[in-house]
Image (cartoon, rainbow, N blue to C red):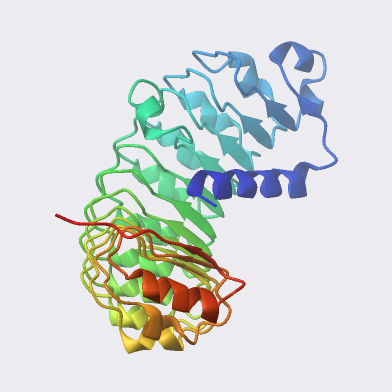
Length: 337
C-alpha cells in the first residue's frame, strides 16, 4: 500500500466519520438560496482556475474540496471561512499560501500537496516552495499533506502542531528534518520519502505512537539508536537509500511487521534479523546479498519474502521454500558484471 493509497484512505475515513449524514453540494449553483445550510461543498475536478467568490459567503461551511482543478491562487478571503474543518487543494497550480490561511484555526484536515505521479506534476500541480509562519497557527490540525511540492526546509515551528496524527512530506527537496519534529508526539503516520535526507534526527524516536514511517529514496546510511523507542511502529519503508549494513536497531522494534530495505547496498545480514520473529513482510530485493537462509530461519510469520536481484544461490531458495511452505518468496539470481 503506497503513500497515495494510504492518504486517500485517510481522507475517506476522516470525511466519512464527520460528514456521513451531511448533504454534499456539488456546485455553486446548487447552493443558491440555501447558503446558510451549506456545510459540505465538493468542487472536485471542475476545471476551476479560481475559487468562486460565492464560496466565501458560506459562513457555515465545514468541508470543502477543490481537488483536481487548476486554481493558481488562494485569495485572502479564505480566512473568512472560520468554521472549516476540512480543506483540500490537492492537485491544483498553487505556488504560495496567503497568511490568512492561518486564521482557519478550527481546521483538522488540510491537503496542499499533489497525489499525481511525479512525472505528471512537472507540468501541472501545486508548486509551493515556502510555508508561511501563519500556517503553524493551525494548532488543531490532525492531518496535513505537503507531499510532492518544492519545500526545501521544514520550519521549526512545525512543533506547534502538536495534534497532528498524519504528516506527509514525501517528494520535496528537504535535506534535513528539524529536531522539533520530535514534539509531534501524536503522530501515527509520517511520510518523508523522496527527499534528500542524509540522516534523521534522534528526536524522531520521541514519536512513540508512530505506526507507519516512510523514509525511502533518500541518502540515508544509518539510523539513530533512539529509534528503538518506536515500539508501536508496524511498517517501515527504507527503499532506495545508501545502507551498506542492515540497521541492527530494527531488531529492537517489537511491533514491526513490514520492512522494506530494497534498492540499498547491503551485503551481509546480521544475526539480529533472526530475532525479528514478528515480521510478516520482508523486502530485500536489489541489494548485494550472497546468503540469507540462516539469517531468517526463525521468521515463522513471514507471508512474503522478496530477495530478487541479489546473488543468493538457488540452493538457498529451495531451503527457504522447504522451511516456509506457506510464504510467497520472490527470487531470481542476478548476474553482476
